[in-house]
Amino acid sequence: MVELDAGVSLEAFERVVRGGEPVRLAQAARERVARCRAFVDELVEKGAPVYGLNTGFGKLATVRIAPQDLRLLQRNLLLSHAIGVGEPFAPEVVRGMLLLRVQSLAMGYSGVRPVVLDYLTEFLNQGVTPVVPSQGSVGASGDLAPLAHMCLPLIGEGEVEYRGQVRPPGEVLRELGLEPLELEAKEGLALINGTQAMASLLALLLLDSATLLKSADLAAAMSVEALKASHRPFDEAVSRLRPHPGMAATSANVRKLLEDSEIMRSHIDCDKVQDAYSLRAVPQVHGASRDALVHVREVVLREMMSVTDNPLVLPDEARTLSAGNFHGQPLALAADYAGIALAELANISERRIEQMLNPSLSGLPAFLAEGSGLNSGLMISQYTAAALVSENKVLAHPASVDSIPTSANQEDHVSMGTHAARKARAIYENVLWVLAIELASASQALDFHAPLRPGKGVEAIYRRIREEIPHLDRDRYLKPELSRLRELIRSGTLVRVAEEVVGEMV
Image 1 (cartoon, rainbow, N blue to C red):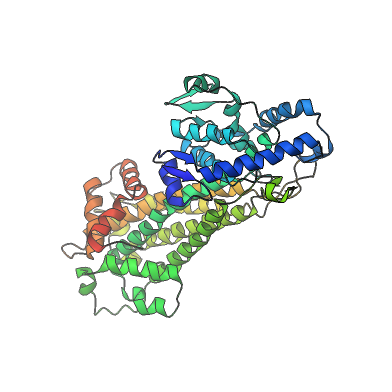
Image 2 (image 1 turned 30 degrees about the vertical axis):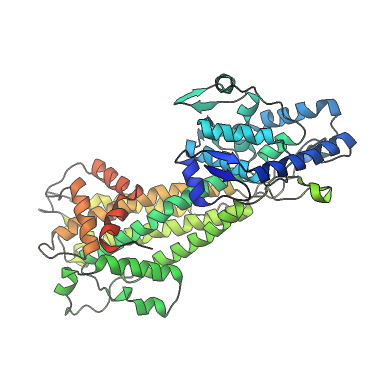
């Protein structure tokens, strides 16, 4: 059971969002929320103008709303803002949105009733997942459209996925013994002002990227052995003299994987002085991506313990503050940085693929084919890797430098944070394919070095890959094999196989 109070860790986030661990509101949080709501009720009773309580929204903030229409105002807000389009977010993204929205409201500065949080936690615990279109947020007043779709089921509108079926929420609420909520003043606005769509996307990306970073190191180590490259660039002294943490981590990983290499000993006296940068500078390139993602993690963790709606309600100070905590710029910049960092893993991986497939660079058969000419071997796999890398270059163009005014120029600078997070996820998916191609290429290249054995970590990975993909002795249909290899990377299977032999990687 994850108790929601003053913050949530990435580990707890994953247990709830992917593992289905139940959640509950901490008693201290419930008391904070109730105290804040009592202050909001006082404000409503006094009738003084407060944005979102008794006024319109955005450019309509100067329009006063009659007391008898305050509930209708909140309902209308959800209905009018739920106009996203495109393919729905994956269920895990929406579950992350639900969890993070509850956590933000539980801080006790948003003015909702505890029952609103109870409904949202019930959705999480019962597996009720709102259907949320992925397009339509500019990341200004937060993720207005996605959050509106997420919260529509609270009032019996929209769609939910429940037990494998997309259904009207009214039916599902009745099955759970619940009635649609009638929102009170401020509650609709508190539900949709926030950054939880982009934050959920980024949190999931960080969880997956931890495995991806290690997998990139695995692929590089295999390529080093496949190309009989030097082990010296991974010497501890190199990173000691340029003390970037990510660089040291990558060097340590690769050293472990290359340990006890017969291939290395076979060319210890060769006259080759230096390798190409895609081999020699692996610690510097992979390490920079690691350090970038450490920064992104820090930003996301801060956001996961933040209050991101407007106006902020401070009951202990008896005041409200209309400000800009809903603006997604911190996450937008972080998401762009994450996308760039991940794209670089594919960039350098594709160059290592070329090193292995090009006979003038590798000293191996052309395109690692037996009977090249009649057989093309892995020639076209490099085309695919090149295409994906080029696509990533387009996707890595920062979204956060863009802005387009909304709400009659009231919201005249927007973050595009959800665009940035969605692009970063697309880059991640492409990197998986490129690493799969590199691992397939390195495995094929290692076959030509037999009976020499690679480092013990590389050998363990190689043997696991060969359980799925046999040696390419003649041309065959490779796409299903690459798909299986990609899944071995995504699932962390290859990392686990390596760690069983070399110990935990960083």
